[in-house]
Length: 117
Image 1 (cartoon, rainbow, N blue to C red):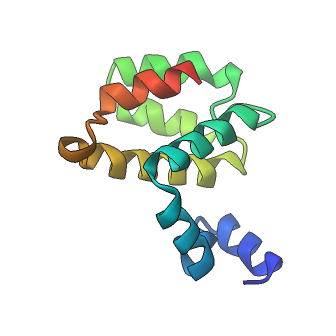
Image 2: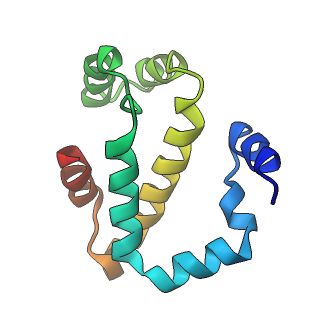
C-alpha cells in the first residue's frame, strides 16, 4: 500500500496495516508480548501524550463521575491527530480485555500497566 494511501486511511480512522498481509504475518509471528511492548514503546515515544496534560484532570474527573457527556466533551477537544490514534488504542485494549479469561489482562491490569508508561 503506498504511503499516501496509508496516511489517508489512517486519517479517516481506519487501520491501514490490517490490509497489509506482510504486516499481519509479522504481527502474528511476533507474539503478544512483542506487540504489547511495541504499543508501550509507541506511547512513550509520542512527543505529547494522547491525552494532553491540560485535559488529563478533566478526563479523569469525568471518568470517576461516570459522566459520559463530560468524557465526550473532553475527547472532542483533543488535537485532531490524537483522536484516531486514541480510537485505535482503545479498540485494541478493549479486544485484549475481552479475552481476559485467556490472557489474564483485565481492564484493571491494563490500566495498571499503561498507567506506568
